Length: 178
Image 1: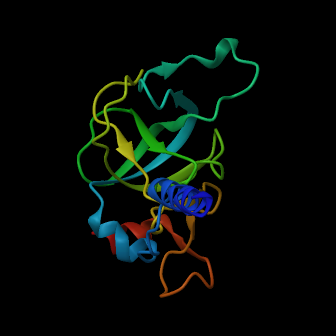
Image 2: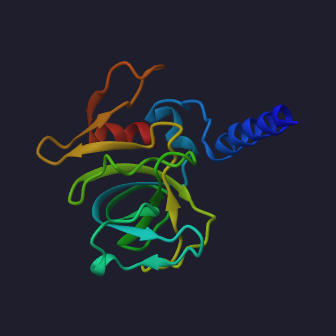
Image 3: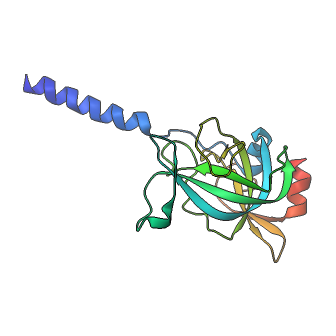
């Protein structure tokens, strides 16, 4: 009897962890995967937003002493649009902790500028920005760092494996996107 209960407990634990985990395979470099994106922008991170996963309500963190581990998004000031249509100057891009195949947002910093290849997000959150929400996939290279001084982007731009990050000018990247 105890063996059956123990075996059942192990099965529940193993499967419950795997149900929440992402198991995607790397989809490729930026130039390969960008063609499947709805919008490609150059944007500066203004701030991060946090949401309650259960209620999908925006959390005002002004009174929080510790940042909660909840759904996270980046508020982005759009500087340039390379692909797609977006008329707003400010958009919101969702990520997470990487468990659900969305990009972990821990590497991003407020004030830094990036090229983002993003898609519309079907989840409904009570955003303080409004309009269409976007997400950043963690299963491929969907973003590149931007250096304003050299006008270059840096990341896994091309190549079959994640062996070497590369640099190219923003203008060269734009030519390759179109």
